[in-house]
Length: 255
Image (cartoon, rainbow, N blue to C red):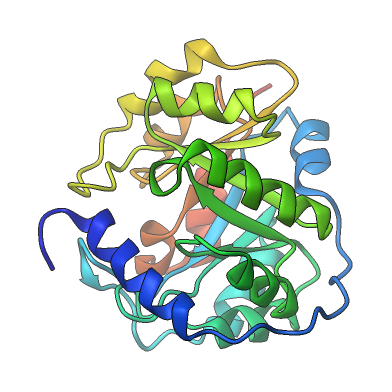
């Protein structure tokens, strides 16, 4: 893959969407609101735990993982939500992983993918997702608003991912309630946890914020805990010898 990861991925997504058929809408899976949960549990840094077999930057992470057992462990150890990678080409995920995990847990599940079309959103809901990811860097503001409104109109919650102040302002402007700050630059795939710290100065009280990527240790979690409601962690959990112990380490008591 070229060094410009995001344009390469989006080109592939356009091809996938063009080949997708429209699915008939299925009933929405019943669970709690992620926004309400994060708002009502401010005393502890909450964890969004990710099932991720591989990534463009790291290559294979844990190909042999039992995805359902991993997800059950996440739920049992107190994760607020499970994020499931469904991109097949670059992350070795699958929509079936989302379907399998969603059928075996009671907490919210996030469809983690590069969503650019309504067809993907319907598929995510039909596979059991109650939350989807939209990435500001991948969409025009107009298209972001359209997809956000479409998803919320279907009863889904939306985690909107930002990486800089301009993107954060877009998320605020269109009324996003759950905002992610990705510490990873999606063009270079380099990470810097200071991204979260710098953008936290511009947060609004009525939103909830999630720090994504570059969270590997208790020290990392403690850095962002004063400013964020939750962290999204994938690699550190997928590589952990003791997943339960790693989750315990990352769930910081904010007092």
